[in-house]
Image (cartoon, rainbow, N blue to C red):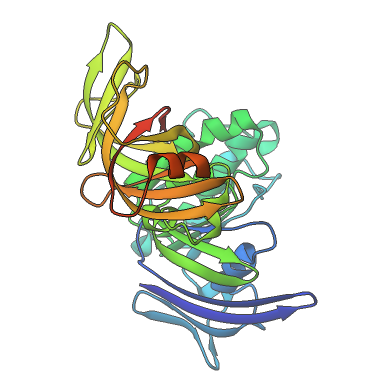
Length: 356
């Protein structure tokens, strides 16, 4: 586990955050600007020495009472919003700077591994990082952080300074790291799309406090949290690639709640992928629809209904074993259909986004 609680006050802002998460995979700190995500990350890094509290990473106490492990002694890597590369060093020398911080016998990540994971083979010979694109610079910065063989990797909105094209370029590398690394990553973001694509656990922050944390879809599926009110509220479903329809250029994804057809994806049969289904793209029927253009229809049970403003409601539904789906419909539709908790219904999924 990673366990922490911190108290820190600035003029106009107070952090009072308690954190308890599993020390594996990607742990996303999510919330609006000013909610305290970066401040909490800086406390974990030891960059806020006046913060009071406790931090334990697995079996090692980094901070408690009068004990405070200084920044340079904490075995972590930190990736900032802006790639802070050394302009006077070559790309290789920037990478070696991270490597040289660790004695050879303690290195768990080798230069060749980091270069392969981040796709830096064509960049490592550059004499300077000056000519690199934003996405390339950030990939070098991530590789340099990994070469310190950290026990914990901190990433503070690493995509926020990039344009849309650079974000699309770097996201597949982050997904690959997610599968390759046995290093927990705490990832700060205010983009729900990034979180849905990368995270295993989600920590939701508001006004300097942790308001919820847990497995990604458990938190996204809670209608009492701010995430349920967002325009892009929805659920993430892990499914297996089951079949490709070459004639119609589609792929069928199977999971415990049924099947979803999506635009064809170049993944091998049996691959596990993530699909994101937005609440606004799910309509409800009380009987099996016939003669509809919507091909993704799932049997579901309504677990909860909550008002969403004066005209709409949010529904949380169970589909299959442990899978959740959200739907946002009008209050009128709820009343006309007589929807209530515990009802068996048919969820019509108008759109599915394959995100990983």
